[in-house]
Length: 438
Image (cartoon, rainbow, N blue to C red; front, side, top):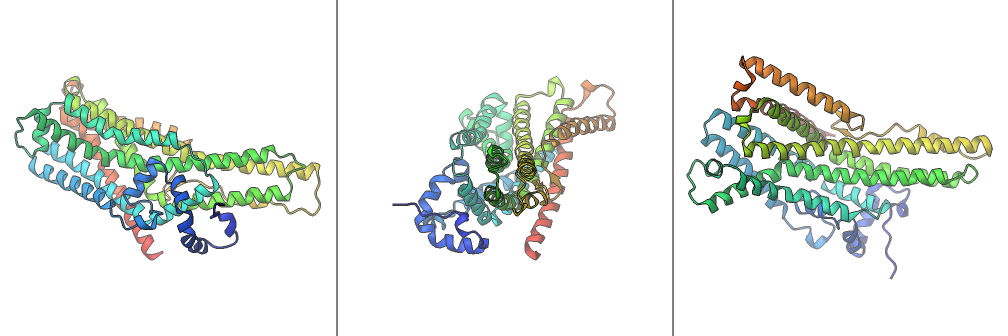
């Protein structure tokens, strides 16, 4: 039985709403095929489960599994607030405040993507239509690795750190005598906290990176098709075919930009500031202050956040790089045809691709994601972290670096999370107002 086509090329000339209207009625026949393709990966199933990608199966749309995710996140926020109130120590209270800032920002990211889950599902369907063969094995392996990090982190913290002190902290200052219960309390609390930050932003960035990579691969294939043509064969028909495919990928890129503008901004800003915090801790802590728990936190948080930051800048920055190569190859091939073939009445399609402005992924129209920004980020990270550490040392009036008290190592963390909260709240309010009034 032939497969029913839902390709955008079959609705060429119609608007997106008409396509979605037609697709809704043809969904019953094509639903299983769609689920076996673009929703077959672990990362896509995870985002369907937490409600950030709309389910394609009508019988499963009423599932409320995302409520489990939200309830756990609200539990973590409430638990962190209670721990901050019970532990009246200034340092512990500040650490809990910074953790709560990160969790609340994760809640804002979830809400932002939840409001646009239909648009994300449409973008994935369109991407599947133009690029139906993703490398699911690699993406599934990476997704499993990311999802296993909370378990690895919590187990290491439970067995390598001071269980008595940490279990007493998480048990609201109640002494826990049983070693088994200590391990259970530490493992559960650490795993849940680490899952929501930084693993949840890491999964958001991984989905974003996966989509950007697939777009880059499609654009690269389109460029290779242009290069393979000779000036004689690169006539109006191949040129229009290239422009048609570019219009389809442009539509996908616009949808991805609309969905991931705020989430990617949060991931980039929070990852950068967390890397500053980790570097500040390394610069300010002494040998006596390098506890096992602190080292585990710094290592795991620094690795995950730096990977997210560099991944977004590299792969999202690869899309405009591939688009420029396509534009350059198209113009060069069309120019060679004009010089050597000298067509008299052919339409000059190169204007259509050259006059369009260059596309660049943006974070809330504030940050532009380019590969050249990686060196800028590294330089800024080193420069401002050293300046903050130097200022903190001068403020504390320390005569000797060795005499730094252990809590001063967390000062960069407080500063960075305060900036993170300020940026994310302002941008979230701005985006929410735009969604309402625009």
